[in-house]
Image (tube, rainbow, N blue to C red; front, top):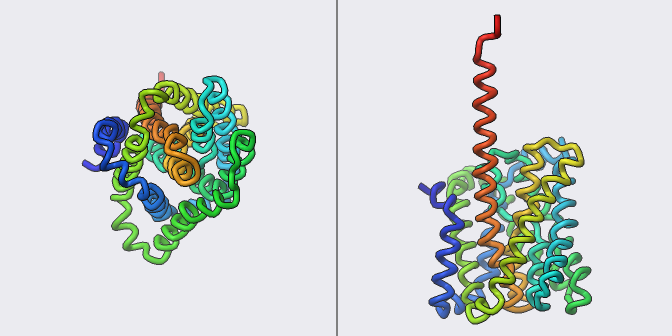
Amino acid sequence: MLTRFNSLFPLWALLISLIAFIANAPFAALSGAIVPLLSCVMFMMGLTLTKEDVARIAKDPKPVLIGVVLQFLLMPILALTFSKMLQLSNQLTIGMVLVGSCAGGTASNVVCYLAKGDVALSISMTMVSTIVGVIATPLLCSFYLSATISVDTWALLLSIVQMVFIPVMLGFTCKYFLEGAAQVVEPLIPTLSVLLILLIIAIVVALNAERLLDVGLITLIAVVLHNISGLAGGFYVSRLFGLDIKQSQTIAIEVGMQNSGLGVALATQFFSATAALPGALFSVWHNISGSLLASLWGRKRTSLEYILRDQESSPPPE
């Protein structure tokens, strides 16, 4: 039941966006809840991490290293490129670059599972990119946005430490010392994360309700191009480094699906509601594209597994 609910996340995101657009006042009143909500999501992510995840990275760091470098190198450049190409406003450009400079999102792990990808690699990449992002995100924003707006890099870094690093480490610590309790809660974490992210999306849409009709379409085009280019770049560039198809598909999902909730929280806290709009649209769109991709790759891999199984079970030719 919960798995079915989680798999319909794109539908719920569209519905809650529509509701928040029409009846925006109740959701807009919750603008101060965005940061605490994201911190809760990060805490729950920490609860899912294990010692085995850390050991896996130490054993085979190459795929994780390639994926994380691609994430922080490719996505900010793509964000700035499409913003300039489509002549987005300064505030929307800030929002695009913020999303592009964030780590991988927790939804990518679910999408990777549905795509029958390398889930261990997906979880490892999310964990490493989240930790690296504490430093990388403010530095990348400062580098790419310095010509557009003054960025308080130190304040941005401290905010990410408070919203991401501390909650993730608290979750990981709870998992380590209270493993029994964490295992009881763990099956509910994907659903709770979905509900909290839906509420964040609703708040941002409500805050931008009056601007959506003016800038919504062009921003959506930028977000779609950003996401698709990230997916394609993650896949093809990682293939050039000699990774197999399963690993490259996993890296594509990780690179293309950002922690847009963090982008929204940072935009709201440091810039404006308009700057949070790309992150809100990205939250909706990357789950749609990710779900479609997971369905396609998952069916292909299932079909291939059946073919290989049939070949193994067939008697040898006489």
